[in-house]
Image (cartoon, rainbow, N blue to C red; front, side, top):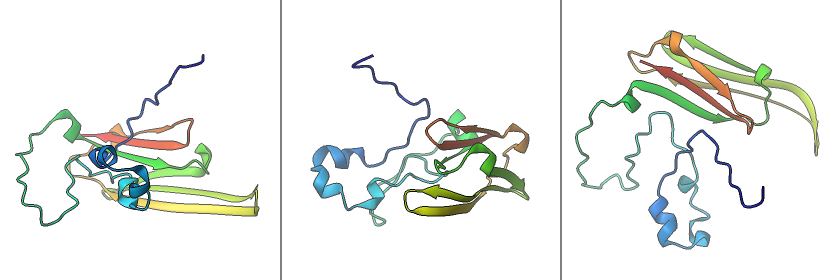
Length: 142
């Protein structure tokens, strides 16, 4: 299978691609915002200059606007280590694993992420996928 590229089915959001095209990668290496993934409310129209006077076009409701999606890197956790809850309009994602051996000794990890759900999201339509590369994708539709 030499020369075959397999793309992951989950689209990874990318911002500022034009910055990478025009600059050398060494110039971009220290700019963390170029590598950080946007939050769940990111709509692709991000301005790095708050004083930018560009007018954004009127937003039309599309199929893309009718769902809520969170992607998280949870490669250090197994699926049974993760709990997903909905409580009073909040999506709560928790992960915890007990002491495990790694290259430096024993380690335990835990996290809690909380997201305010937009109005109109149906909690019964929640789906969660734990991808083989450690990405957790949680989606809900209106």
